[in-house]
Length: 227
Image 1 (tube, rainbow, N blue to C red):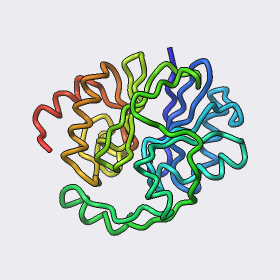
Image 2 (image 1 turned 120 degrees about the vertical axis):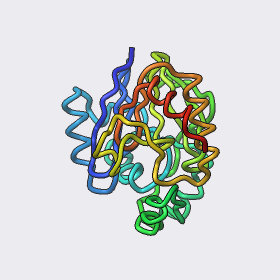
Image 3 (image 1 turned 180 degrees about the vertical axis):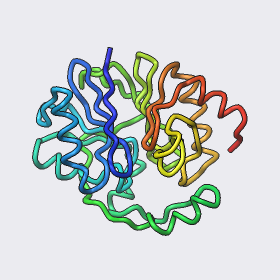
Protein backbone atom coordinates (compact mmCIF):
# COMPACT_ATOMS: atom_id res chain seq x y z
CA UNK A 1 0.00 0.00 0.00
CA UNK A 2 1.21 3.49 -0.81
CA UNK A 3 2.10 5.86 2.03
CA UNK A 4 1.07 9.53 1.76
CA UNK A 5 3.23 12.22 3.37
CA UNK A 6 1.60 15.65 3.60
CA UNK A 7 3.95 18.64 3.47
CA UNK A 8 2.30 21.71 4.95
CA UNK A 9 3.84 24.67 3.18
CA UNK A 10 3.41 28.40 3.62
CA UNK A 11 0.16 28.62 1.65
CA UNK A 12 -0.73 25.15 0.36
CA UNK A 13 0.04 21.46 0.79
CA UNK A 14 2.21 19.20 -1.33
CA UNK A 15 2.03 15.42 -1.02
CA UNK A 16 4.65 12.72 -1.40
CA UNK A 17 3.20 9.33 -2.30
CA UNK A 18 5.58 6.45 -1.71
CA UNK A 19 4.81 3.09 -3.26
CA UNK A 20 7.31 0.97 -5.15
CA UNK A 21 8.61 4.35 -6.30
CA UNK A 22 7.86 7.87 -5.01
CA UNK A 23 5.85 10.56 -6.76
CA UNK A 24 5.45 14.19 -5.71
CA UNK A 25 2.00 15.76 -6.02
CA UNK A 26 2.25 19.57 -6.42
CA UNK A 27 5.22 21.78 -5.55
CA UNK A 28 3.83 24.65 -3.48
CA UNK A 29 4.60 28.33 -3.96
CA UNK A 30 7.89 29.88 -4.97
CA UNK A 31 10.15 29.67 -1.93
CA UNK A 32 8.78 26.33 -0.68
CA UNK A 33 11.47 24.22 -2.37
CA UNK A 34 13.67 23.74 0.70
CA UNK A 35 10.74 22.60 2.82
CA UNK A 36 9.68 20.06 0.18
CA UNK A 37 13.24 18.76 -0.17
CA UNK A 38 13.52 18.41 3.61
CA UNK A 39 10.22 16.55 3.74
CA UNK A 40 11.31 14.14 1.05
CA UNK A 41 14.61 13.54 2.84
CA UNK A 42 12.80 12.86 6.13
CA UNK A 43 10.69 10.28 4.30
CA UNK A 44 13.86 8.63 2.95
CA UNK A 45 13.31 9.83 -0.61
CA UNK A 46 15.94 11.44 -2.83
CA UNK A 47 14.57 14.11 -5.14
CA UNK A 48 16.29 12.58 -8.14
CA UNK A 49 14.46 9.30 -7.42
CA UNK A 50 11.01 10.87 -7.98
CA UNK A 51 9.20 8.95 -10.70
CA UNK A 52 7.08 11.98 -11.64
CA UNK A 53 5.88 15.35 -10.37
CA UNK A 54 2.11 15.25 -10.75
CA UNK A 55 -0.05 18.36 -10.48
CA UNK A 56 -3.60 18.50 -9.25
CA UNK A 57 -3.83 21.74 -11.22
CA UNK A 58 -1.73 24.63 -12.47
CA UNK A 59 -1.75 27.60 -10.09
CA UNK A 60 1.17 29.49 -8.56
CA UNK A 61 0.69 27.92 -5.11
CA UNK A 62 0.84 24.39 -6.54
CA UNK A 63 3.30 24.85 -9.41
CA UNK A 64 5.77 27.29 -7.86
CA UNK A 65 8.87 25.05 -7.79
CA UNK A 66 8.13 22.66 -10.63
CA UNK A 67 10.44 24.15 -13.23
CA UNK A 68 13.26 24.30 -10.67
CA UNK A 69 12.81 20.67 -9.59
CA UNK A 70 12.55 19.43 -13.16
CA UNK A 71 15.77 21.20 -14.11
CA UNK A 72 17.75 20.22 -11.00
CA UNK A 73 16.63 16.63 -10.58
CA UNK A 74 15.41 15.53 -14.02
CA UNK A 75 11.90 14.74 -12.74
CA UNK A 76 9.26 14.31 -15.45
CA UNK A 77 6.31 16.72 -15.11
CA UNK A 78 2.65 15.80 -15.50
CA UNK A 79 -0.55 17.85 -15.57
CA UNK A 80 -3.83 17.82 -17.48
CA UNK A 81 -3.80 19.36 -20.92
CA UNK A 82 -6.82 21.54 -20.08
CA UNK A 83 -4.53 23.65 -17.87
CA UNK A 84 -2.03 24.20 -20.68
CA UNK A 85 -3.46 27.69 -21.23
CA UNK A 86 -2.34 28.70 -17.74
CA UNK A 87 1.13 27.36 -18.52
CA UNK A 88 1.23 29.37 -21.74
CA UNK A 89 0.46 32.64 -19.94
CA UNK A 90 2.71 31.88 -16.94
CA UNK A 91 0.33 33.26 -14.30
CA UNK A 92 -2.91 32.45 -12.53
CA UNK A 93 -5.08 34.50 -14.83
CA UNK A 94 -8.38 35.88 -13.53
CA UNK A 95 -9.39 33.98 -10.39
CA UNK A 96 -13.12 33.66 -9.67
CA UNK A 97 -14.11 33.89 -6.02
CA UNK A 98 -16.63 31.62 -4.31
CA UNK A 99 -18.73 33.48 -1.74
CA UNK A 100 -17.98 36.88 -0.27
CA UNK A 101 -14.57 35.95 1.14
CA UNK A 102 -13.47 34.40 -2.13
CA UNK A 103 -14.57 37.45 -4.10
CA UNK A 104 -12.60 39.71 -1.74
CA UNK A 105 -9.48 37.55 -1.98
CA UNK A 106 -9.60 36.90 -5.73
CA UNK A 107 -7.88 40.16 -6.78
CA UNK A 108 -4.92 39.29 -4.52
CA UNK A 109 -4.17 36.01 -6.30
CA UNK A 110 -5.30 36.80 -9.84
CA UNK A 111 -2.33 37.14 -12.17
CA UNK A 112 0.26 35.81 -9.70
CA UNK A 113 3.15 34.52 -11.87
CA UNK A 114 4.98 31.20 -11.80
CA UNK A 115 7.74 29.71 -13.92
CA UNK A 116 6.17 27.50 -16.61
CA UNK A 117 7.32 23.96 -17.30
CA UNK A 118 6.33 21.78 -20.22
CA UNK A 119 4.42 18.58 -19.55
CA UNK A 120 6.43 15.45 -20.21
CA UNK A 121 3.30 13.40 -19.48
CA UNK A 122 -0.35 14.27 -20.04
CA UNK A 123 -2.29 13.42 -16.86
CA UNK A 124 -5.44 12.19 -18.53
CA UNK A 125 -8.62 10.62 -17.21
CA UNK A 126 -8.18 6.98 -16.26
CA UNK A 127 -4.39 6.91 -16.59
CA UNK A 128 -2.90 4.31 -14.25
CA UNK A 129 0.19 5.22 -12.23
CA UNK A 130 1.54 1.70 -11.73
CA UNK A 131 4.48 2.38 -14.03
CA UNK A 132 5.46 5.19 -11.65
CA UNK A 133 5.32 2.85 -8.67
CA UNK A 134 1.94 3.88 -7.26
CA UNK A 135 -1.26 1.80 -7.35
CA UNK A 136 -3.83 4.35 -8.43
CA UNK A 137 -5.31 6.27 -11.33
CA UNK A 138 -6.04 9.81 -12.47
CA UNK A 139 -9.57 11.20 -12.34
CA UNK A 140 -10.27 14.43 -14.22
CA UNK A 141 -12.07 16.62 -11.65
CA UNK A 142 -12.57 20.04 -13.26
CA UNK A 143 -14.18 22.99 -11.55
CA UNK A 144 -11.42 24.74 -9.64
CA UNK A 145 -9.59 24.88 -12.98
CA UNK A 146 -10.49 23.22 -16.26
CA UNK A 147 -7.59 20.81 -15.89
CA UNK A 148 -7.93 19.92 -12.22
CA UNK A 149 -7.33 16.25 -11.48
CA UNK A 150 -7.43 13.91 -8.49
CA UNK A 151 -5.20 10.97 -7.71
CA UNK A 152 -7.43 8.04 -6.77
CA UNK A 153 -5.40 5.43 -4.91
CA UNK A 154 -6.42 1.79 -4.90
CA UNK A 155 -6.32 1.95 -1.08
CA UNK A 156 -9.41 4.20 -1.09
CA UNK A 157 -7.47 7.37 -0.29
CA UNK A 158 -7.49 10.26 -2.75
CA UNK A 159 -5.53 13.47 -3.30
CA UNK A 160 -8.06 15.95 -4.66
CA UNK A 161 -6.22 19.28 -4.84
CA UNK A 162 -8.50 22.32 -4.56
CA UNK A 163 -11.81 20.62 -5.38
CA UNK A 164 -12.70 21.61 -1.81
CA UNK A 165 -10.53 22.65 1.14
CA UNK A 166 -10.25 21.92 4.84
CA UNK A 167 -11.18 24.51 7.43
CA UNK A 168 -10.80 28.26 7.32
CA UNK A 169 -8.02 30.80 6.81
CA UNK A 170 -6.46 28.67 4.11
CA UNK A 171 -6.70 25.57 6.28
CA UNK A 172 -4.99 27.07 9.34
CA UNK A 173 -8.15 26.78 11.47
CA UNK A 174 -10.30 23.62 11.83
CA UNK A 175 -8.28 21.94 9.09
CA UNK A 176 -10.30 18.70 9.17
CA UNK A 177 -13.65 20.43 8.53
CA UNK A 178 -14.79 20.27 4.88
CA UNK A 179 -15.38 23.64 3.24
CA UNK A 180 -15.78 25.24 -0.15
CA UNK A 181 -12.52 26.42 -1.64
CA UNK A 182 -12.26 30.18 -1.94
CA UNK A 183 -11.95 29.99 -5.73
CA UNK A 184 -13.40 28.01 -8.61
CA UNK A 185 -13.78 28.62 -12.33
CA UNK A 186 -17.09 26.72 -12.09
CA UNK A 187 -18.31 25.82 -8.60
CA UNK A 188 -21.15 23.61 -9.89
CA UNK A 189 -18.64 21.60 -11.89
CA UNK A 190 -16.34 21.37 -8.87
CA UNK A 191 -19.17 19.90 -6.79
CA UNK A 192 -20.01 17.43 -9.57
CA UNK A 193 -16.34 16.42 -9.52
CA UNK A 194 -16.51 15.99 -5.75
CA UNK A 195 -19.48 13.66 -6.20
CA UNK A 196 -17.38 11.50 -8.53
CA UNK A 197 -14.53 11.48 -6.02
CA UNK A 198 -16.85 10.42 -3.20
CA UNK A 199 -18.29 7.61 -5.33
CA UNK A 200 -14.82 6.27 -6.15
CA UNK A 201 -13.06 6.66 -2.77
CA UNK A 202 -13.70 5.39 0.74
CA UNK A 203 -11.05 6.68 3.15
CA UNK A 204 -9.12 9.93 3.47
CA UNK A 205 -9.28 12.89 1.09
CA UNK A 206 -6.08 14.92 0.98
CA UNK A 207 -6.64 18.51 -0.11
CA UNK A 208 -4.48 21.41 -1.24
CA UNK A 209 -5.28 23.52 1.83
CA UNK A 210 -6.01 22.11 5.28
CA UNK A 211 -7.07 18.50 5.69
CA UNK A 212 -6.82 15.64 5.45
CA UNK A 213 -10.56 15.04 5.45
CA UNK A 214 -12.48 11.90 6.29
CA UNK A 215 -14.62 10.47 3.52
CA UNK A 216 -17.68 10.14 5.76
CA UNK A 217 -17.35 13.73 6.94
CA UNK A 218 -17.10 15.06 3.40
CA UNK A 219 -20.09 12.97 2.33
CA UNK A 220 -22.17 14.44 5.18
CA UNK A 221 -21.02 17.98 4.31
CA UNK A 222 -21.83 17.46 0.64
CA UNK A 223 -25.34 16.22 1.42
CA UNK A 224 -26.18 19.60 2.95
CA UNK A 225 -24.29 21.85 0.52
CA UNK A 226 -25.56 22.35 -3.00
CA UNK A 227 -23.35 23.97 -5.65
